[in-house]
Length: 167
Image (cartoon, rainbow, N blue to C red; front, top):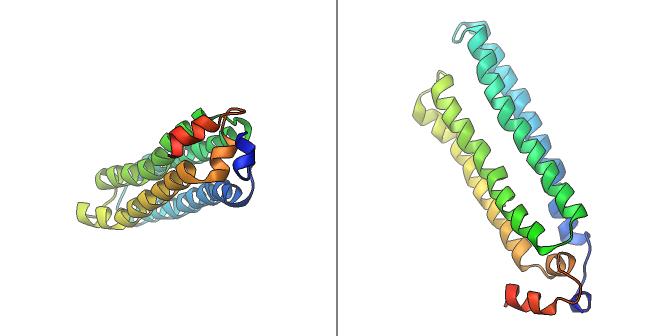
């Protein structure tokens, strides 16, 4: 049986992974929105941007943040409730979207909306993109190679699926 090959269930590093995705990532996006709200307010106050322009730019960044928070919550919810291998496949796609789309969208919106040069916007967002790639890749490696994940998200009596998936 698959459960005999090792630990299963949401515990240990799998719980830490879900806490990072479900708690730390939304808190990061909330803090980022507070920071962007300050930038938009200061740009409008200093006359570098009209109040309507500041609100529109804030609104675009808010849509990105709310989407990322919703995707984080969806990842945790689906992994907590749905214990089949297709869950992991869906979560892998969602992880790459979660950690790559916000920095890319921030860069694109920032290039057109903010009064900084294109080079400055790219340099500021490059670290976020790099960390996004690192975290998405680390999550992918963990979800595709950990025994706990394999045992938790398999069909009952599916030892063959472990061998097909993990060698």
